[in-house]
Amino acid sequence: MLILTRRPGESLYVGENIRITILGMQGKQVKIGLDVPDDATVYREEVYKRVIEENRRALATSNEDFMVAAELWHETKK
Image (cartoon, rainbow, N blue to C red; front, top):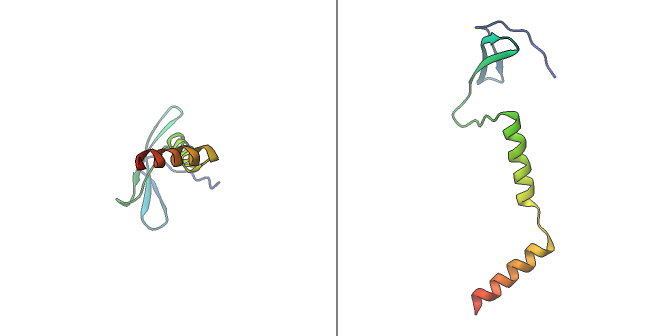
């Protein structure tokens, strides 16, 4: 992990087109601003982890899934 020290109003860049600016600090909280391209997706960590887990579960298949799909297919053919 890269650790940098910045003061309110100072920025840093990630790559060429993502700018992170420290907007302010209150106690243990730091308020940051992000300038990112319109096509970039930004998630809070807890949301990102939930999205990854949901995607993993959606991709998981079992033999039972195939059996149910086959039964539904045969029912629609009747």
